[in-house]
Image (cartoon, rainbow, N blue to C red; front, side, top):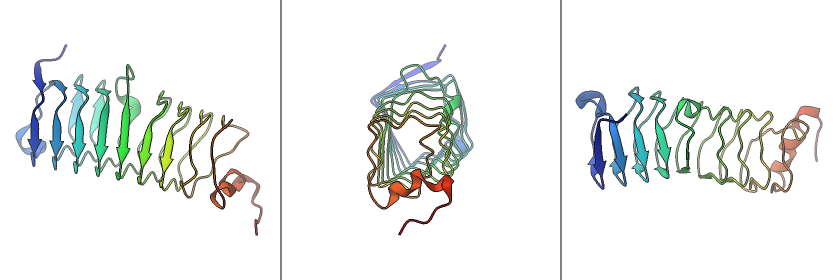
Length: 190
């Protein structure tokens, strides 16, 4: 059970490492230029919140609800999204760094990733149906038994996706990065 309820509040330039983070439910709140790095969240609910220019590097989000959340220009290094509460999970990422993060086994249909760095991200067994990877760098990201049906990767770069072990029906790709579907064959495309 959550402790406190915060609605439509704006938090600016708060270093939660110094002041501590109050457990509770945050609805329609804005967090601008806040530091959450290394914070251990547990049973916190974020509903329809926006995080702008925030640092969540290596934060722990165990059983944290993320419903209708927008991350804009945030640093989300090494975040294990698979530890959050999956009920009504809804995320949007723009101009954010999610390197080394994990979405293992999460259902994230229609998730928007725009202008993001997604290097070495774990998407294994995730459901990313109809998701959009707009101008995203997917270097070293892992896709295995991942549902990418109807996903849009036309402007994504540096991905390596094996069509034999991932569901890619009606997904959208563009040349020359579509060669990332053939990388396991170690062939040369000219």
